[in-house]
Amino acid sequence: MVAWSEQERSIIANLFSNLDYEDVGAKALTRCLIVYPWTQRYFGGFGNLYNAEAIKMNPNIAAHGVKILHGLDRALKNMDNIKETYAELSVLHSEKLHVDPDNFKLLSDVLTIVIAAKLGTDFTPEVQATFQKFLAVVVSALGKQYQ
Ligand code: HEM
Image (cartoon, rainbow, N blue to C red; front, side, top):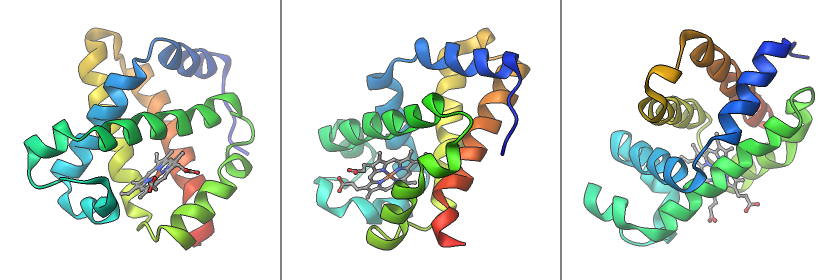
């Protein structure tokens, strides 16, 4: 089990309580699809992904970005039980969606960049290290079904 200090817990709780889900969720998934175009292959049913502008305007992508952030909420609410919390989503992404697990890391890095850009100087080294630890645990839990 991963250990979390009180400071780490409060950094993560604080980060999520100030998070603009609509904006950050949409931006993170949009950027992921633009910067790593091969990730588009999983979203063929989402409509027009023809170029960066189309991706940015696509309401299904924006909505799914928000859904992913709410998926991260589950880790926030179950900090001491992240592996089990993602068991079902891990099965879904591996067995049904066949998402290459390397993509979880790509998305979490893009998400970190979007949040850093929004927080500015509030994105301190402690916040960065804690958020990346949090995401690494989620990525590992999501990838569990693949191992
Ligand atoms: C669906 C979370 C990463 C592709 C979902 C759902 C959640 C979720 C909560 C909805 C499940 C449901 O409807 O029951 C996450 C989290 C991620 C992540 C927390 C990482 C931090 C990715 C990545 C990809 C991806 C990197 C592909 C590059 C998909 C697809 C669906 C899906 C294609 C189904 C969409 C649909 O047809 O509605 N994900 N996901 N996910 N995810 Fe992920």
